[in-house]
Image 1 (cartoon, rainbow, N blue to C red):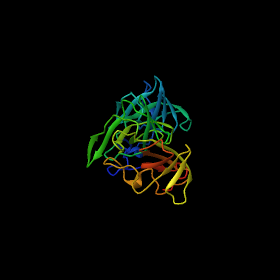
Image 2 (cartoon, rainbow, N blue to C red; image 1 turned 120 degrees about the vertical axis):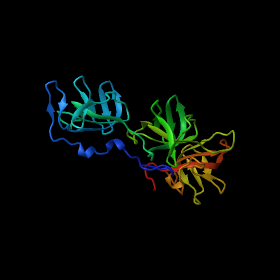
Image 3 (cartoon, helix red, strand yellow; image 1 turned 90 degrees about the vertical axis):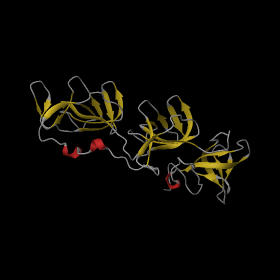
Image 4 (cartoon, rainbow, N blue to C red; image 1 turned 30 degrees about the horizontal axis):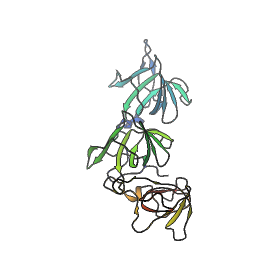
Length: 295
């Protein structure tokens, strides 16, 4: 499976909050009479918040961090102790220290000294991509089967020549979306931190966008027809549009599209007559083998 797919205007994500993390190791850690962590603050808790359940915070590493009344939210600035924001949100990058076993799956934080919202930089990474097959409130299902949660913190933005441009927030069935999650991108359900592309796939006016879907179980000798697990034969010809097209589409080599049709590939496309015994594809948007990708 592709790890990070990048739009023409999209590149690798930079995490400004992580700059200088390696220099924040501790020489010592002490406790004042009031119990405040003082001195050079050690860091043995670090990660991006993927889930919050009361005072239990789950990081992208899977580690659970317990926040209690004794947890200090502070850092050092030119030798002085400075309080930091104690409101932790999903997507925030945190660093801290525990006097317990830092290698344990669940730790209690003595101090949190970094709690910052991760900024999607001028180069936006992509690890969410697909065609919308279902919309249920704020939950979107893609043709890959992945569920994407949209919340109030999800940014709809892309970059064009160094400038951020808002993306249409109206996601509908048939739209092709790309985005990014700070959480586990391989999970079946992810929360989108950003949607950087929300394109309406081109098809004849007034027609449904996606009405060919399934997994290939058989391919003809000439490679131009294939049988789906739905029992339908699909034929492509010289007029069939291959891949996602339009101004918002990613380059062809960055799409979920193989040059040949083979058994096991997942297909999403459009036909003008979905009731025909054999479907002639007007467009094939996705042709991808999730288990054994060719590229």
